[in-house]
Length: 129
Image: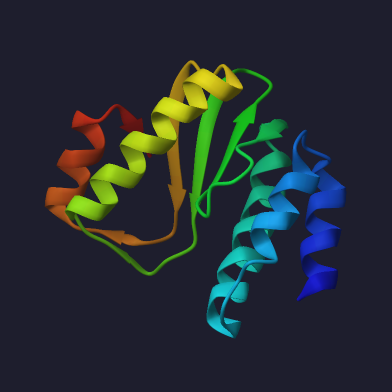
């Protein structure tokens, strides 16, 4: 898993990568570690078409900003529904991405099945998919 993480981050070379590695090392289980591996590999794939400039450093949800100023939240899960926790997390990372990374737009990148309520919540919060 360590090799996969380092290979993906090396391919992207985003600012703040070392700080994000510190976040990754806080994984408390194998499943959580795999979440981080999947996140950075999805980031690497995104980088091929929209270059990544920097990462939000201490967010467990991987959030990057592209060279065009779009914040991309990478979410490697199977299902996304509208919950208070999801709403709070997305608001927090949106605020931080704008303030800390200078993001001008928000995008959620996920392969998840997104419930209708979650789709409405994402749109209301300004997230594109």
